[in-house]
Length: 355
Image (tube, rainbow, N blue to C red; front, side, top):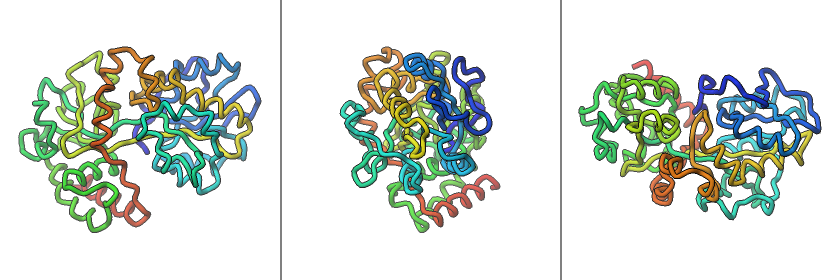
């Protein structure tokens, strides 16, 4: 999912190489990975490199379609590991691109039960990916300017009290998912007929909003006070700013929120499958999970609950660690549209942007 644009990525990667075009030549002492920007943090990658005496070559990408295009344009064996949106694991695996993972070598027993996600990460009972991080598309806000209690009800955004002070996150799936929840529609039940009922509230929300923004613009607008609320935001938007501005907050309203989750997989034609598996095991470990959760690109909850023993009290507080059990009962997964529904969603989104 194009949730975190390249403008957020690190400009210096210390010992880690960010590959600009194609992959580095396959070698026993290197690993080539297609990743999201949080996986490029040197504090995450360097310990693995030092432990195994290897170099990790990274290429950051956005969106499953972009990742598949890179694989299509690469030679077999160019890439070893891929980070992917959990809801898209089957889409990639059905093309024969993912290798089976030995579940008995992964710390799945330490995962939050809801984050094992066997229905997404496994095919016919065999894991081909493992969840590495998750969080929520919900409501971010500045509590210095907004009544936090009002943010517990999504309908308050349509009250008129916040007109001109709202930013809409520029990604149609979670925003339409949230509007569906506000209308009492489960994200799994979102079809063409239900989508049409969301047209009016989407246009209404746009009329009340100051802007529709990608991550950096939304984050900046909230931080400098141009807006007070980001519809579709969450911990990934505000957590990295918590120390600088503790008034920037987020919540899951009574109507619920949309759960995002990202997974990591070994590619079937990896030139270094053993090293690739070791990398997946490292990312899944408590140490790897704690570093990934607090990546300088964006924060998110680790799938492995044992990471909580490594995170500091302040880090757990920002991530709302103690509230996760409740949160996970109040959220639904991203809509997973077929081609027709996806096209209709994008058409509706374009109509909103042009309105």
